Figure 1 (cartoon, rainbow, N blue to C red):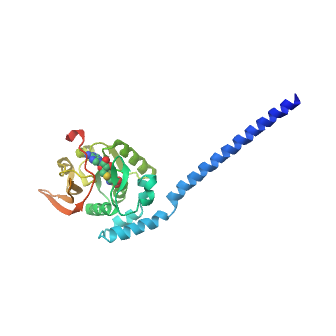
Figure 2 (figure 1 turned 180 degrees about the vertical axis):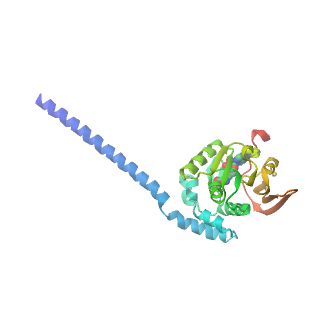
Figure 3 (figure 1 turned 90 degrees about the vertical axis):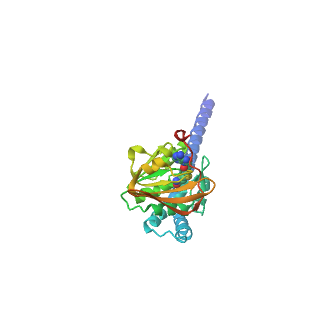
Length: 254
Ligand code: SAH
């Protein structure tokens, strides 16, 4: 009788000790994982990468706007791309962000932003939210950024990323960008980060007189175009040849 009681106590004690240890063990693992994530966010590894990116890809190619340069230096581009490729986030090219879409090459992001000539008080419309990276940059240079993304999953992800990183003046909407965002029009500036075949008329309508719009236009051959909406005419300037993902025709356009 006493023997079975002792065996029972022994088993009970081993059970308690084992579960305590495993609990502690998994707690230790989750702490370690957390620390690793945090260290990536906090540490300065990306600071030297972003400085190198700005100097060798952006300034060297002729971008001079110091506000644009400063803002780009302070935005962790690696947190806008899938984790598996975050170490390539500061390299000289576009990167996949899922759903067949890409985050644009850093130089093109900088050039397009510079062309908008934002001073800080503007209401900006972006078509093609993608990862949210371009919107993050705009939000630091203007008053607010309204951004429209046709792929719902990307819009959701971008919204989450931007909220986590603390951006409060960016409004993301999952919809067809050809329609713009009427409720908030007119905009001081519009940027389109996917290529339509022609400049979308509705978006010109939603641009203020005196406003600027930057977009890639074309199919196989594409050009980056700067549009200035003046009182009685539209001025168009071709900047450079570019390569963007096509702007998808939403149901309203087909
Ligand atoms: N600006 C983004 C990169 C955009 S890639 C960034 O900083 O990450 C182009 C994006 O335009 C893609 O996410 C694509 O889904 C979106 N897009 C394509 N056609 C669209 C349309 N008609 N309306 C809104 N978004 C569109």
